Image 1 (cartoon, rainbow, N blue to C red):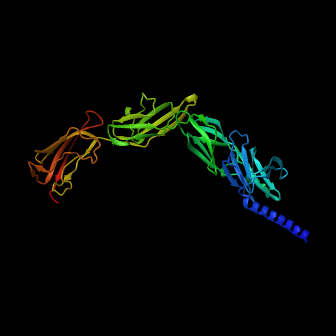
Image 2 (cartoon, one colour; image 1 turned 180 degrees about the horizontal axis):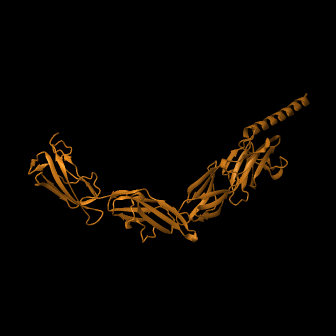
Length: 442
C-alpha cells in the first residue's frame, strides 16, 4: 500500500513538474530574450504563426557587434543556458556558440549575422527562445563623376534578409528603410525600400551652387534610427543663369536691377535689347550689348527710351577649363514714354466727378498749360516744375476749376496749349495744342 502511495506521489510530482514547465514556457517565451544594445527590433513574418524576434545593431566598423541576453524563467539562478546558431545548410541549430551553467541570466556578444537559439534548463523544466541578429553597416557613398550637367555619386546599403523557415525559398526583409540623398543637409532624392534592389544606385545633383558642398546618404530604419555615410565634399560646374529683375515697368528713365541666385559662373555677359518686333533697322546703342560688360553676377541698367525690352544673360563657368554655359532671357520690361493725356470735356458743376480740367501724365518732368477762350484771350494757366515720378493716379496736381476771376466760366469751347519736358532725355520738350468743352449740366 505504501509503495502504491509513493508511486502515485512520484507521478504527481512529475505531472506538476511538466505542467510547471509548460506554464513557464507559455508565459515567458516573448519576454525572456532581449538585446539592450540593439537599435531596432521587430518580429519575423513567417507563413505560420510561430514567429522569432529580430534585433538590428548599428555596426559602423562591420565587425559584428550583435548581442543577445536571456533570463531564467523564474528570475532565479541555477539554470543552464545553451546557445546554438542556425546552420543554413542543414536547417538546424547545430553550431555551438556558448554555455552558461547554474546562472540566472546569460549574455552572448560579438555575434555575426544569423539565427540564434538559447535553451534554458533546470531539472524537468526546459524552455527555448529564438532570435535573429543583424549587424547593420552604414551606407557607402562614392563620387562617380561631374560635368556641366551635374555631380554623380553611387551609393550602396546592405539590406538584411532572412528566409521563411516554413518556405525556405522565400526571403523577407528584416526591417524597412527610407533612403535620403542630401547636399548640405538638404534632401535631393528619396527612395523607399520598394525602390531599392540592393545594388549600388546612382544619385545625381543637377543644381548650381557656389564653392564646395557636403554630400551624404542617410538611411532611416522603421524605428527611426539613422545610418549615415561618410561625408563627401564636391563642387559643381553647373551654371544657372536665371535672374530676377526689379522693377519690370515704370517711367523713363527707368533703372532696373538684375540679380542672379547661385549662378556659379566665372563670366557674365548681359544683353539689353528691344523687342525684335519694335526694331526698325540698326539696333540703337542703348539696346545693344554693353561694350564694358561687368564680370559680376548682378547688374543695373537705365532705360532712357520708352518701349518694351528683353534682357539676356549668358553665364559661363570656366573652372578646370570646363566652359559650361547657361542662357536665360527675362520676361518683357515695359518703359513708359513721356506722354500726357488731355481731357476734351469737363463739367465743373460740383458733383465731385470731372469737376476740374487736369492732365494725365506719363514720364513728364515738368509742364505748363495755358487756356484761351474763343477770341484768343488767356483765361487760365497752371504749371509744375518738378512732377513726382510714378504718381498713383497719373493726374496732375494742378488744373482749372472752370472759373475766371472767381466766377464760373461760360459753357462752350476753349483752347489749350501744353508744353512739357520728358524724363527720358534731358532737354526733350513736347508741345500739344487742342480744344476742350466746358459744360454746366449735371
